[in-house]
Image (cartoon, rainbow, N blue to C red):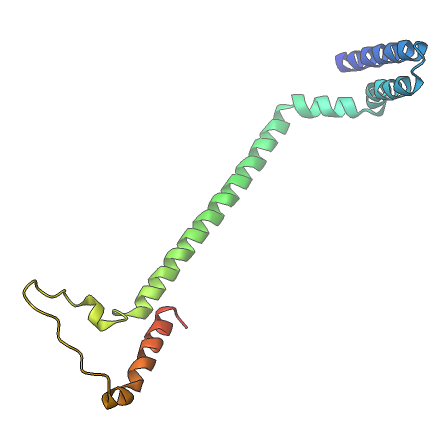
Length: 147
C-alpha cells in the first residue's frame, strides 16, 4: 500500500515537471520526462511493485539466496580441490614412472678441492663409434618429458 502511494506521488510529480517543461516550449524534453514519470504508475498497475516488495522483504527469499550462494561456493571449492588433487596425482605418477635420475652422473658427488677432472679422449675415430651416445641423450630427454 505504501509503495503504491509513493509510486503515485512520483508519477504526479514527474508529470508536473513535464508540464512546466512544456510551458517553456521544450516539448521534446517534456515528452521524455512524461515518459519516465509514467513508469512508476505502470509498475504499480501491473503488480510488479508488489512482487518486488514481496521478494525483497520476505525472509524465506533471502534464505533461498543464501542457499544458492552456499551451493555455488561449495561447487567452486570442490573444483579447486579436484584440480589440486589431480596435480598431485600427476606429480606422483611422473615421479614413480621416472624411477631414478635421468642422467646417472648428475647425482655423483662433486670432485674434491685437490683433484683435477679427468681429461676426455681426443675427438677422433672413437667418436664415430659413440653415435649411440648422442641418441641416448635425446632418448633420456624425451623420457624426462614423458614422450
